[in-house]
Image 1 (cartoon, rainbow, N blue to C red):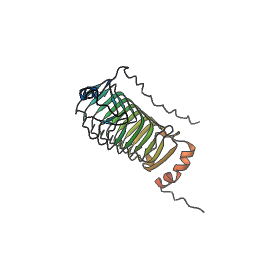
Image 2: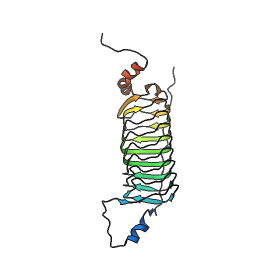
Image 3: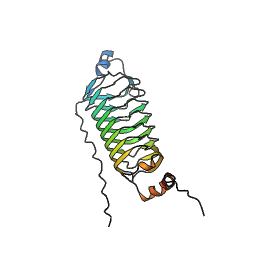
Image 4: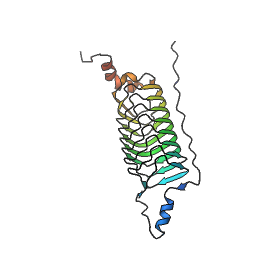
Length: 242
């Protein structure tokens, strides 16, 4: 009798932010004068510093478009309702932090490290995470288009109730990764290495490339039927009506 292999579930982050987070940019606001009211619905333009050290800070309602935070470290930080379009954050480190309702198009996080991070209701497009390291990360809700995770290392990562449109996992290493409630559309798994990857609860699963890299993953019977034509094409089987 063949023994069924037990798949290991991801370990989720346990982020506990300090209760007294200092608001980033508060000094600038005070200097502007109390009479200068800020529209609660508007974004305030702000900047980052390369190799900056950000500890126990709250970034709230900030427009960080094009900001250069290459190599910066964010520890115990909260980024809420911020814009990170074209922001440069290669080799940045985000540790014990949360990102809520963040918008980022073309954000550069190549080679970055995300450890014990929660992303909630984010809208991401063309974000560069190639060569990045993600450990104990949850991406919950929202949508990510063309997420570039080429050559990245993902350990204990959960994509939950979100949409991943054409994600690129080529040459990436995924271990203890799950996709509950996630729609995975036209993913690229070319050259990827999977171990304890749970795809069974994904609401949608389609692969553009890399069907042969699913070894190390577990899928549902319904997903197997949906992927059958791709499996047949991979081994050179032609399927046609008699």
